[in-house]
Image 1 (spheres, rainbow, N blue to C red):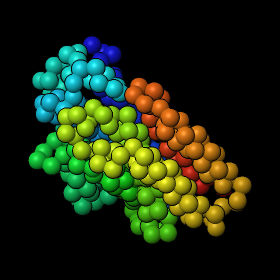
Image 2 (cartoon, rainbow, N blue to C red; image 1 turned 180 degrees about the vertical axis):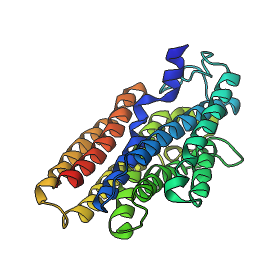
Image 3 (cartoon, one colour; image 1 turned 60 degrees about the vertical axis):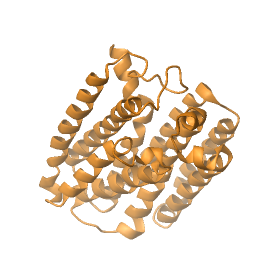
Length: 293
């Protein structure tokens, strides 16, 4: 039973949430501010929000008949009978309430207008799979990830630690877009793997709509665009030796992309995890560069 719940959390993808917070903290340090408590709260909030989204995805896809036993990818606890639908719904709503309480504490640093931001994140966590127009079922998943795993966490993690929007256009926003594009790549691998299953049940992900070849090119382009953005915001600010991190990212990105194009089914699971870890590594590189340089 515990194993089923851990599988439902999809631990391999959780570095995606952490990456946005680390990158936002890097921007905060550059702007002259680092505050431990809001950093920890942002990190905890982001991780729980992603788990809520993962749980909701399992529950609502099961209820809509979009999952079937033995499908490719991570084992679906509800579909396979390891977890009851009622237990999954209860866990989803309980964690959502807990995360909302955690997020409310950020009002102390960011002001009351953090409330609509938190509401938007909560709605996304559920709306990704639920509601009258689930984002993940209509080819909008990658755009949602760009916003809610990139721009928003980077921007607001920076803001609650510094209390300012200094260098937003020249640093924080492009960093948020870069991290968001990397996060979108994690979803592309997921949908690339599940394309046949999703097509069979009428789930219109981006890969189902545009095809594997097109989305594999988008995957490659996202990685390149991310690096160009990070080079643009860092090369004039830090010693050029730090660009070695970007070159390493591009090298591993190319290797993963090549393997993705020649893999299918469960062979793609490790590549999904590696894409998430590569994104996390880039956020650590950015944080280290700004903290040390």
